[in-house]
Length: 200
Image 1 (cartoon, rainbow, N blue to C red):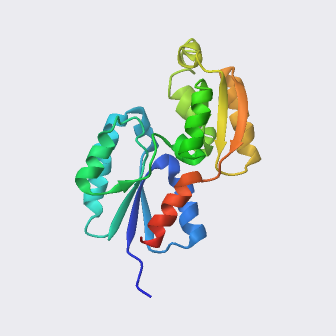
Image 2 (cartoon, helix red, strand yellow; image 1 turned 90 degrees about the horizontal axis):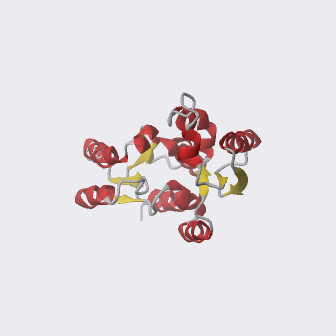
Image 3 (cartoon, rainbow, N blue to C red; image 1 turned 90 degrees about the vertical axis):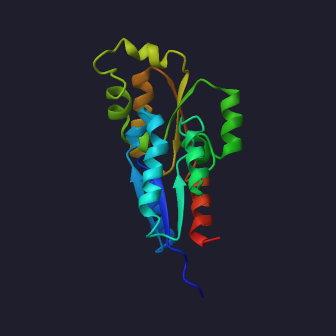
């Protein structure tokens, strides 16, 4: 049986735990992951060049490279870089969509576009990323400016973790929004990595 190609996954730091779990569970010993800081989402224009640097630094050491970023607010600039570098990324505009399933997310979002989404990562780090990150802890008046047009928090859960469910529900209460829980598992992240893991 031929040896599986040595494969690198370049991922958003917000996906690190899920990616490592999938590699471990599937025993993909030929796969490695390197992450860029999740805080790049606050400056998405920096994502494409940061991904390009990772790709170029890894070319000598890996047979294949995949990118675990959606468009993530880059306005197509990430896709332009990946086309130039000949590297494939997971499909979708953001992780909420590929966790939910692209078609299912689009249908739900079209039906109710006033949802603020959390993942396991965002539920775990809500205060630091949202409350402190947006300055709401220092300027409470910003709460309505940022969230006044939302109706509810939707927690798209990758794992069945009651502690995270409580944190997500507390986040909704903190924002003054209704709360909804949806278990997605790893969604299309798992199927994309399965294809990469098979070396096809």
